[in-house]
Amino acid sequence: MKVLISGAGVAGPVLAHWLRRGGFAPTVVERAPAPRVGGQAIDVRGVALEVVDRMGRLEDLRAAATNMRGMSFVDDDGAEVMRSTEETLTGGVIGSPDVEVLRDDLSALLLRGGEDDVVFGDWITALDEHEDGVRVAFGSGRVEEFDLVVGADGLHSSVRALVFGEESRYLHHLGVYLSVFTTPNFLDLDHWQVFHRTEGRMSGVYSARGNTEARSMLGFESPPLDFDHRDLARQRELVTERYEGVGWETKRLLGFMEEAPDFYFDSMSQVRMEHWWRGRVALVGDAGYCGSPLSGQSTSAAIVGAYVLAAELKAAGGDHRAAFPRYQEVLRDYVARNQALATDTPGEQATPERLAAAANALELPDC
Image 1 (cartoon, rainbow, N blue to C red):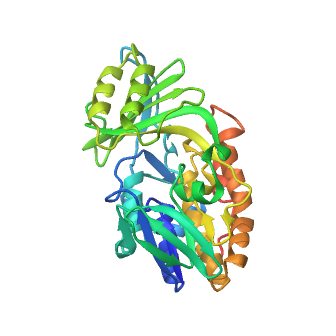
Image 2 (tube, helix red, strand yellow):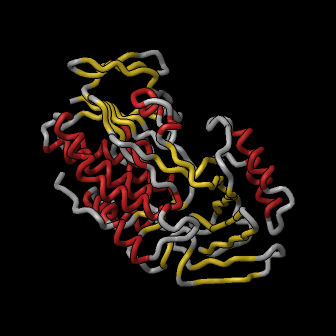
Image 3 (cartoon, helix red, strand yellow):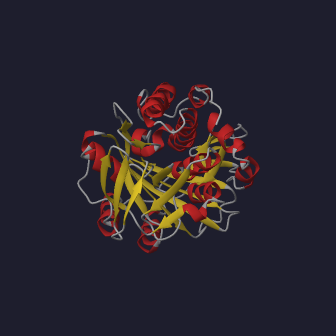
C-alpha cells in the first residue's frame, strides 16, 4: 500500500520507518527544500524512549543529548538571583531517564536511513478521496494516487485544513508566544542555561552542541495575535515591539534574532479534535493533538502516536476503517493526560512525578 505522509519533522520519519518495516510503501513530502534546522531543546520521555529504542537509535539519541549541568536566573544587570544544578527549565530534573536533545538533531536522527522516501520542496495542495484511494495534487503541479494520506505537518497542518477545515476550530491558544533561534555562545556558557524574567516576558540562552553555539529564546504573554505564520519579518517585528526597553542582554539578543537563519516564532497552542481521521486521511503528532511546549510532551506524543498508527495499520492489514479508530482508541487517554500537563496548572511546570506518569501512560503494541 502507498501511504503519503506530509511532514518530515518528527512524527513523519517515525511513521515512515515503521510503515516500511510493516510492508507498506511510504512517501514523505516536506515543504522545506531540505531538512529543517533550528528549534528549541526538546525532551524524549517515557514510552517515546522505548519507541526510539525499538528503532535501534537510543544510544545515538543519548549521544546527541544536551547534557545540561544546570541553570540560573539573573536580574536586569546580569547579577545571578537564583541557580540550580538539580534541574533546568527546558529539561526538568537532571539525571532522570529523560533525554533532552535539540529538535533538529532529533529530526535528523529519526530520518536517517529513510532519506530516499522523502520529497523535499513540495507540498499537498488538494486531496480528492474516492472509493479506491486518494488523488493528491502537489505544489509542483504533479498529481499522484495513494491508498492513504497522513498529515504529520505540525501545528498549522495543511492536511488538517484541507480535510477538516479552518484551523481556528481546533487551535486553543495558551496565552504565550515563543521565538527560538541560534546565536553564538556569547555568554561562554558551559552546558548551562541563563534566564531573565520581567513582567509577562522571559529571555533565555543555553549552550548547544558542545558549547560551540547557543539557542536563544524570547517568550511573552499575549492574547491571540493576528499574523501570517509564514511572514518572518512581521514576526520579528512583534518580538522586537514586546521587548523594547527590557534589560539584561535583550538588545543583543534582538540583534542576533534579526540575522538568525533559523528564526522560529509561534503561539503556544494546543490542538484538540474529536476525531484524528476522516475517510482515508489521518493526522498524527502536532497536527492532530499538539500539547504545546508548555506540556513538555508534544515531541514524545508525536513519536508515540506515529508508532501506534503504524502498529494499528499493520495489525489491520492496511484496512484504514479498522486501523484509524483503533489508533485513536489506544492513544486518546495518553494524549489527554499529556495535554493536561500544560492546562491543569497554567504557568507552572508539572511535578516530575506527574510528568513521568503521563509520559508512561501507555503500553505500546507490537509493530
